[in-house]
Image (cartoon, rainbow, N blue to C red; front, side, top):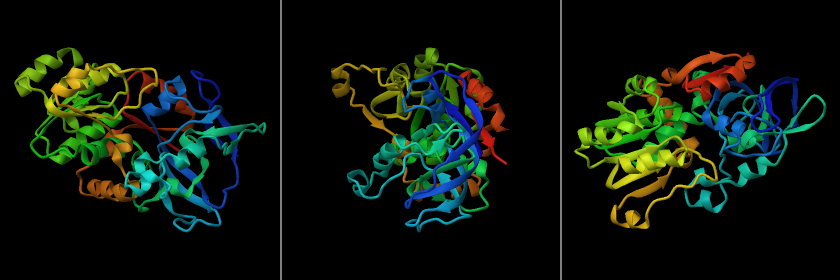
Length: 361
């Protein structure tokens, strides 16, 4: 029996259970003992119904742990390996993978979303968020969903390498390809937004503006590399002061709401790039005049999973952390126990925290 946080209905409080079991790993699957998992806004989006997946569901998608069992056809990992969980695994064979965009592969993820791999104490089946479910002590997932990592990397750091850091830093380096000396605006200074800010600093941007209505986040953003911070209401004044009114070379939307996309669009100079990082609701529609699409010359670029190939990029992020250039510890607001998860979800919804890490003994 294992601990797991189960969502039975949209908007409900999480059911924190100690009677969960998993199915046995199939020939291409592995069992992972989760050691640390992050509390991310995407988790909140599932709980609140902004994003939808089959219920009941074990929440959580950002985690790291130790492989305990492997299927007969698994050769890339073995029991005892430390791994990062990928919630968007690439199959290596589909059109997206073959053309070199593994972050767009949905083959394994879509199959896993409708494959219940957990069992409740009464025998009922439960799904795992994005085919994972890292708010559980144990999970079963496809072997392509686990990325081996050096054993000296703390599990709480490794967990953040499964979502927040690749999504944010990757959006800068892989998707926008921010150039040294450029100007960057970041709409949203949560955990992923702070990773974007770190990425912009690493890329050599000279002006990095954090835009967030919560002024308490401004000093935090500056600690991670923002050169300036403002609220959306004061954006035009700040844009005038920093760019002479022209706008920024790159603007990152890291909220997942159409109003935030508008803010990013308005922050961007003519000919600049707007990078969409946040995951929004299907019925939240963004509108822009077709004339503006042509005459303003701005490009809208989606940054799914930061355009990351985790097998390539996680070692890079680890090297940056080892060199003292990527601050992972600073992103962790607190380390909590499993029983504190409902309070952690509320703290995230209230904007009081960056990343809380649940540690399993």
